[in-house]
Image (cartoon, rainbow, N blue to C red; front, side):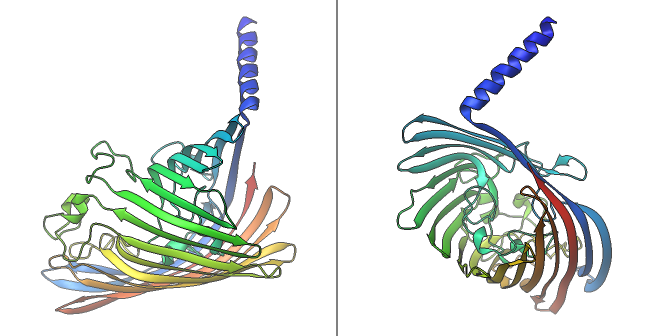
Length: 408
């Protein structure tokens, strides 16, 4: 009896403090089915006997968590300290609803973990959060220009297929958001260490650091945004030494000609809401960006370091949303063109381009629950050039996804 009374007292005290601090528990559960067909080229062989291209095909039907938007749960709250001064927090974690596991491996609240202060002079946020050009998180300012956001299914309308300079959620972030003047809001960000590490020193040349400056403009039906971001790469990436072999870590990469210590990314969009249709145009230029996220095959090895080469290029996306039969229809087309900006000893020069189509539809069953379906096609193709000749490779993916989302 005493234990029961004590538990009730504790719960009552917690509920009272939560009410006073305006704390909210929220989340999203997204589950559906995904069909994908992949036709990809793999590079096989070795530097002694030569290389060739083999084609690999696959068909897969699977249960998909986050086929429309990532499943998540979170806690957020605010407290007004005085007139013109509010302190708040947000803790948000992702999970895969089909098996209940964490969606990210680096923490319970890996989607967002921030404490922020709001004043008449603007807002300052501290912690883990999405970059201004990440397409995710509270301070992202570019996703309103993406008709199908950051992805349906695995690749339908996925902006990461086209905008290879797109940032991510980063640790140790400081964000400033200005008050809005004449429809314009200014943002600034700095991550002293993009990913926390026991072996790297925060704020030093031993770790990757992210910086961004951006602004949004909203004037009725017209909206726009522009972001410039850069990553100051750690010295292991810039000054790496070793043999030309499949790298396991940055320090094992061979010294490359043409590798710079800072990336340059410029992203922007413009959209106009005509009521019956809302078209939007987004574009990105990227240079000296680390990594190429092409998963055509694990067979890229030895002299083929596609996933680690620095790259430059551009991407363009045209999209639109429109009300249709009580729901909302989505459509997009994207294209990019890029090349590697370096050559490793014995490696090849890479030149690639991508085209991506996607269409989707959402239908609300209530204010908190909706159905969705989408279909898309992505083709990434290119070639490796060397003195011995070239190898042409491509990856074609077709996807269809359907599911249900419940918000709480």
